[in-house]
Length: 423
Image (cartoon, rainbow, N blue to C red):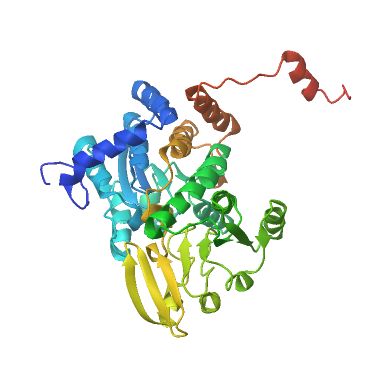
């Protein structure tokens, strides 16, 4: 362990060989990131840049940090969710890529924040975050650590909301690229990635049959859309709960039943939260659920289900399967909680398929390069990645799929740009 002259904290370095195979497997399905890495290796656009990354430590993330290092960056990686960490991947990055990793599957809250602080110790120029815990910790550390930061990137919806709140409060100290808001991220990662991986996690934890089940999806953002679409595709009857009237109306027009969660509680067999907010499934919902209802979260961290209230209204609990805990309520009904209320797609399965993370992490790599190219030009605000970069990533993906598309003719470009032409 001490033969490696880098700082790290992982479970077991001996797991590294298995981790390498897992990383190589993911790389097969990430051709866009591969092309970016090949360019980065030649051009070294990130040379001398210190990057602190707080992301799910998975085989897909490993391919991103390897790309950043290929571009010349000095990378430190910590986990954005303790239960999503793949310990063998962490070991492989340390042993074979000499990347400082601070991540252990199942570590407690204290250890989680200790790892974030370790990832920040080299005083980053760029931060890469998934949920904004790294950024908020950095801001709490004060001016000394913040002084050298050029900018940051944010991977997920909840993190973007937090960062926009910081911007509005006037406390955000440096510019952030909201990678989550790129079309090549949320239209694919959030919808197709979350949709498939969430059901995968539920199936691995329970082996339940979706066909004929009533599935309640809490939230109809892009993640909720993906979950609802896949559940319906497997034969489930899907109910949507929402607080946004436009999304609720859209869900109804998409053919789903829409109602309040309190009304859906007695009906559902499986409940999935995908909102990014706290206590979405609360005490009064739990008390109304039918015997044997399954509840899980695919939204943010472990806050969407009020697990504290669940324990308070229960008189007994037992683990039925890995990541599958049954709570016997005081009213003698049973509620089954998956993955301790954490992200079920990452805690009970492997997260998004590499094919979709290829687009998300291409955005992350390009956003880091964009921040460097625009150093000192951006105010401390939350920005979208420029449209031309977003579209460039889509074109790269199409090329890897051997798909060709049409282009506007000169005549067509002139027609849509000339307001005087009329019809």
